[in-house]
Image 1 (tube, rainbow, N blue to C red):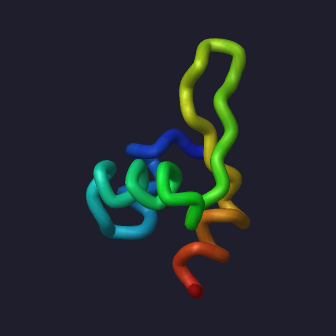
Image 2: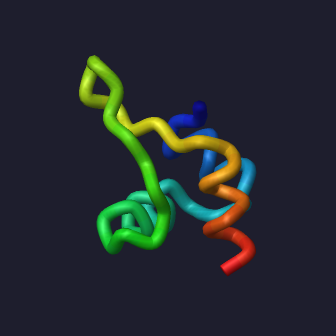
Length: 50
């Protein structure tokens, strides 16, 4: 699982871009028990390939 910041680093985009993609429903993410966003690496790759 990746945080939005880790996902942004891997995708070479800003954290804001990741957060907008989550908000707009283009990138699937879950909230953990501490209410932090978590992104599966496979979901990040899928988003990058779209």
